[in-house]
Image 1 (cartoon, rainbow, N blue to C red):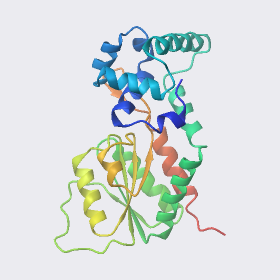
Image 2 (image 1 turned 90 degrees about the vertical axis):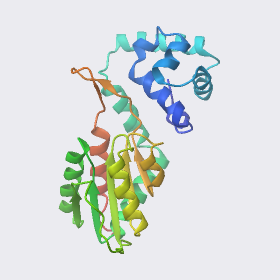
Image 3 (image 1 turned 90 degrees about the horizontal axis):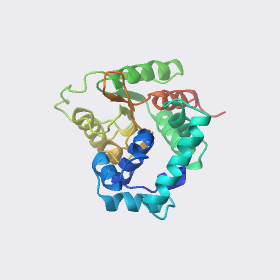
Length: 243
């Protein structure tokens, strides 16, 4: 229902609407615009502006199209994970995403050292990325303690790339590390689920995956980490010097 080109034009609040709708289509199909505004934590005006960007004349038309889409999906069911991932991988064929991966790859290729860092559940993915890059000949290290104090003396990190993995892009300790490295000359590559996050704002290259959250059995919510693995593997496999 939403094309990649359209989604690329959304602002931070409109992205929240997009993510809520794509993550809860069945619930949204029965909501009023006010209920959707409350659940996505935006105003009704923001929702109407979002729908206009998506090519809908109003909320009634959108609800009709959504119900039709749900009916078609019921006839050809796909899991909650498959649909967002299909959209994500379709985006990877777009010229701007290819350019971003090439730009990030070039930063890694030009660097003497790549440091990967993350906190929480993303730390395991950053560790995987460290080993992956090393296997492809990149001198890479893992900064596992994001609360690690900064050196007292100024450092020249102009030949260093800091690759940060953060779902929200708002982890204070991770952002502080990014700011420190950047102020000392390092380049920042961010892999994040929020293209409008603070981390995305300070990074030199942002590899985002604005996919919706899915409900977990525990009652909480989670995001598929397939996009992170994809980005890490693409960077590693294309970092070899050009022939």
